[in-house]
Length: 507
Image 1 (cartoon, rainbow, N blue to C red):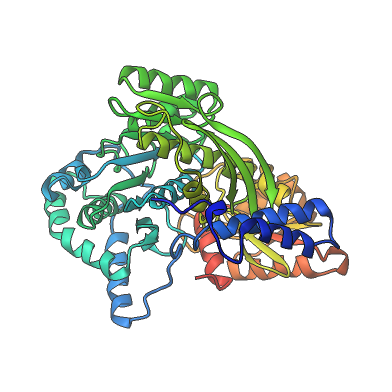
Image 2 (image 1 turned 45 degrees about the vertical axis):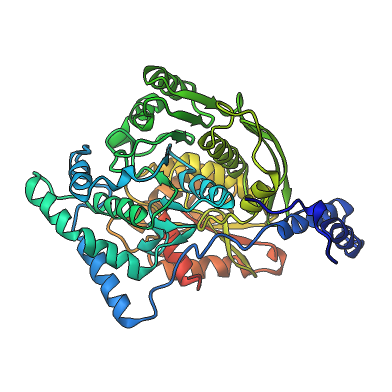
């Protein structure tokens, strides 16, 4: 089930020896930095390769690519993810005609406002480390629609994605004909995911809600573990205007007798969640009480953590992601997996520490403080609301020593744009406002008008085309020798980040 402990290995490259060798090589540098770097590099030797291909490129076979584009076009003809009729009636009808595939496996269901996808990826990696076959359903995608449905840590193959769509298409059309509204884009994708997972078959699924919880299309599963990441204001037109109202919608993922893993929350949101747990006789584990981050320190390429889980303390965890928020996500993910295995309630034991270390060290989360270029360093982060922006700003300030940071910001029109810009204002020397290619994008001139109010006219540049915006920001970062340590952060939307990732050659 797990790798042997490093101390039990008898080869020519013992980790302890490697650690000493690395420190010895770094004698000309700050000794504290040398130890940190040696520690992180040594911990990486315990890990396997990173999680499978995170962001797949377009299919190389022309026929497959054409078929995938045809499926994407058909799905795009349905209601988009922001146009909703709040009900699970249609998805329940689809599950019925498909033979209830979502009941073929246990599930861990994740809701919250920020951190859902990163937490889902961590949970998936941990489950894989214990030799369980996993299905993961997350949204939105960074570049490829196939990212949303993953098997064993890798996005579903395009051929399988197409096959799954064609398999359920007749049933989708049957439900369409019976309902007042056709199934939406997200509802069809959810049906595809649940069908693909049953067909694989998988041992467990990790499912991220699309929006809310109670009436979200994913909420036809009976999850044994419900995870609630931090709640803040987003989608207020649909979910409510206070954390408590939003929590009310999101609490719908808490099922009878489940275990709830509750990240740190605003007080009013926590109260709503706890009340719902009592109503359905669910067990609650709270961050800061039953589990949490005991310690963390910055390391090269990420951070070193000590996590307190439901079954005890886990030391020397290397997480190759930046920011305190990712450390908290890691604590949530660990406790969710412990709860899935019955630890803390049914069993008083810890999970194998080497398996935990190996899993966390292999975690990747594209578009979350992701470095995609050097000289100058370009970082991508999909923050799209004030809370996410604050976490990204804190994370980049902690992990990078930029002498000057240039922002490239392209947002959706339905977000709290002013709040997002205000969160980034302290760390951006200048900001280049732009827009992505979708209809949801805020017009660059409208965004600029708000940015000028936040940053002042002399710190704002407008480049409606994203490629021009990237070039302008990189030029600003390179313009003076004095600013040799300047960097660029691209943010504001998952879509903006995904398009920037393609433009910068990451596929």
